[in-house]
Image 1: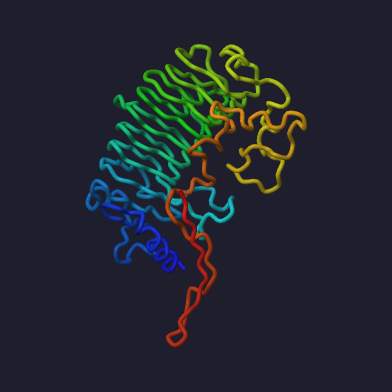
Image 2 (image 1 turned 120 degrees about the vertical axis):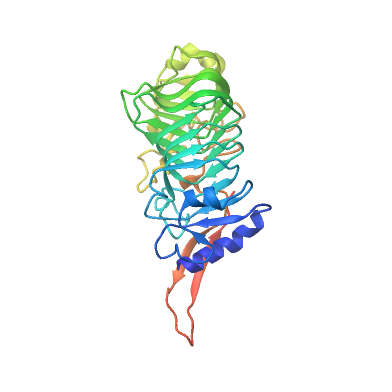
Amino acid sequence: MRATSTLLILMLFVPLVSMGTLLRVNNNPSVADEITVHSSLADVLANHAAPGDTVLLESSDLPYDGGLITLDISLTIFGTGYFLEDNDCTQADVRPATIEELQINAPNARVAGIHIGTCNIDANQVRLMRCYITEYLGVGTASPVTSVYINGNFIEGSHATALVDLANATNITLKNNFIHNTNAGGAHNCKITTGSGVILNNLFFGEPDNLFHNAVVQNNYFELSEIDPLSTALTVSYNLASSTFLTAWGGAGNNNFGGLPEHQPDTVYCFTLMDGVSRDGKYQLNAWNTDPNSGNPAENAGADGNDIGMFSGTTTYVLSGMPPIPSVARYNGSIQGTQSGGTSATVKGKSRR
């Protein structure tokens, strides 16, 4: 099954690669000795990859290389996504591709669809998209960076200070992310201390507040989490919150609303109102239990006329963090055949953006 699935992925993927080499990495014992398949991501980055290449990190039960991976080459790494068993039609093999710690030092690097523990970005124009980060995300903590793009990630973990630390980042884009510091006593969900950026269509979940500096804050939903009063030089508009803190940031005059029953998360989002809802799908806007007079207050309430929250805008959050490459969504067939009759299988591929 894996051989057939992999073949179809590569057949679909080739037209998308306009330059550079496509490198497969798979650390499963049954696959690692196949021709053209590498077992170690660290080895590929150190000895085989070149700028402009694309690395396809395949499903596995084990983290890749079991520790720190350092990315010093300007290339693309695509994983398989996450919560693959939660959402329909993701891919046949629901195991994720996991990196325990990723250090990105290469400008213009692109990383998508990977389950990452800790991620540090210390290079310009890096794009981190559709990843599941479970320990910490730091940007510009070792050296100043600019034009880093963080879009469509599910970031949830316990951290004593800031789960997302944009320490020295200029022209940062934080867009369509779910951010939840599960440490109720933690200092912040997200912190921008030096630099500038735009903070659009995110969901800030949990109790820790957010410390922002020199930023445009629009189209976000704040569940318990608030904007720290020590934040400075902000333009705050078209946001929604479960509490009334947005009155300190212009309130209704800036199209910021919160604190009423219709602004609570179990009304705004699907949340726990649907049986079997996925871990990320439950944060889609609730179309079933809204005020019959006004509808869902997040609907069409953003600055651009679109919805407030992570599932809206031009680069909406994608369920399960599926990377923008084709995948084998379903496979039905036997993994064994005969010399005379061979074998048959039905494979369904799905192309993604």
